[in-house]
Length: 263
Image (cartoon, rainbow, N blue to C red; front, side, top):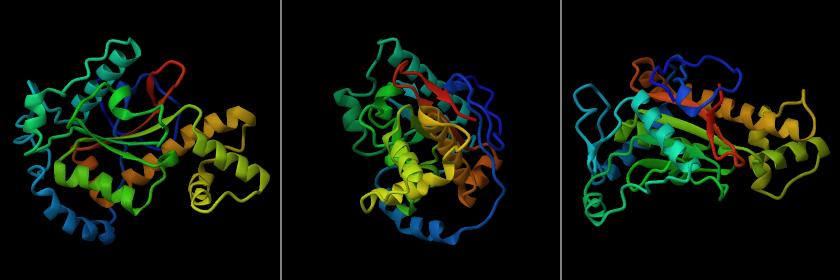
């Protein structure tokens, strides 16, 4: 990661590493359903933390253990990049697990990033980014598929907890993407509920490639598609426009354990 997080526009090629990620942008369009759904969530969140936007006056205030909470997209990206470097070098810190911090987290939380990842057991965000208790809001669905529950969970982290960064984290050899590609090629029907996942991933299938190359390209295309959909959400787009939020796409490589941006 580097610190010059600027706007992503449209689909493009992969970049290296995750710290080079830049915020996705989108124009403001209202969607009342998500805002309505979060009205009740705000009341539930009152006992968890002070839900405030990450403004200049509040960014530096929360701390986590002995470290200030990253309060800007660039700071959050740098923290994740540092954690991934530790992970792939086998020098993990396993931070924020002390008894004192566990007690502190009973009264408040100040996570600095939302990670929307796949359910794959080999890609737990807290491990691949070497983060600890209270650092990340993690939302996981097969193939990073979006539905109202996923959207509401991400929006809660951003709107109610003032989180400045959302990462859409796909990964190498994604089984959900493979199932969608193979079902599309064969015309077969997957079991109920799993077919729903395939249907959601299908628009991202890259028919210009064959075999494993098609699956790999579709993993990246699916990350871009999900990132773009999130960036188009009105409440998120408003924060992107003011620089309070970045929405980035990234892929975890199982072979190298590195997280790389997908633009």
